Structures are given as C-alpha cells and as structure tokens.
Image (cartoon, rainbow, N blue to C red; front, side, top):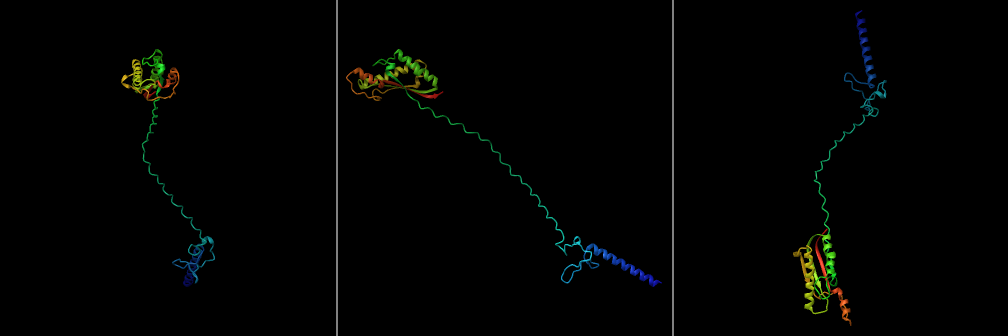
Length: 231
C-alpha cells in the first residue's frame, strides 16, 4: 500500500516537471538545458528549436536576422553656439562736403574814354556814374568780404613813355579815390600804372590822327580786379 503511494507521487512529480519544461520550452522556442537554462546547440553550432518555435520567439543569438533591429538612436541635437557679439563701432560722421574752389577773379575792364576825357585823369560825371553802377553796386552785391582791390591803369602809344606812365598812374589813383569816397577801405586798394607797355590792340599808322586815336581806344583803359569772398 505504501509502495503504491510512493510510486504515484513520483509519477505525479515527473509529470509536473515535464509539464513545466514543456511550458518553458514553448515560451522560449528553443531547447534549453537545466538548470543553467542555456540553449542547446547542434553539432554545427545551430540552436535547437522546439516544436513551439515561431519567428516571434526568435532569439538574437540564435536567429539574429529574424529579430527586429532597434531603430538607430536619433543623433543628439548639436548645441547652437551663438556667434560672438560684434564689437560696437562708433558711427563715423560723414566727411564735410568739399569747399567750392574759389572763383578766379576776372578783371573788370572799363575804357578810359568812359571815365575820363581824352588825355585827362579827372573823372567825368558819366565816369562816376559808370563806376557807381559797374563797380560799387556790383562789388557790394557779389562780395561779402573784400581782401584786396587792384586798379591797373593803361595808356596808348601816343606820347612819350614817361608821360603815359604818369597818366596811367593818375587815372588809377582817381578811381581809387572815388571808391574810398563810397565807403571802400583804402588800405585794401592797390594801384598800378603800366603806361603803354601792355597794349591789347596794335593799329597801323593812319593819315588821320583822329582815326589813330579812335583805333587805339582799347589800349586806354582801367582794369579793376576784386579778390575776396563771394556771396
């Protein structure tokens, strides 16, 4: 009686052990050895599959091609490095516009006959009116500052050299005196006499002296040159 009970217990234990092994093999899909649980391999080195094996039970060591590979890890985002701050540059003021080149003074030429009687150095009333309009009004309107006024007297070739030299000087002085009387600074006015040394017209000898005098009119002149700041 006791022997039958012992045998029955042994058979039950063995059946339970076989059932657990079968469940374990079904869960793993490969034949394993107890108690280590390592997968049995054939003589060629391949893993021994159980009858329960399916691709879903594939092991990475036994069937690496059937095991889905993990997606590659996303690359770590690169830390954005802020560009170095630009050095502050003080604004540069634009250069001032270039100053206009000073205008070259152009001499104002007045015929001696417009200012004086022939062979005289005294201003006529018409000569004073001419100076008032052509010089006084014009200079006051065009110049904000006067640096110097040059007055140059010229004569013709009639008469001696010394006579024409002195006559040209006296005519230049007469014009200067009139400008001073009209408020111009006499210290800024310079006079020169050139006599007959700088003619602008050469006239051939003519039978009539009157015709020669008429022809030489451009040489008898007064040139006025103003240097200063224009408005």
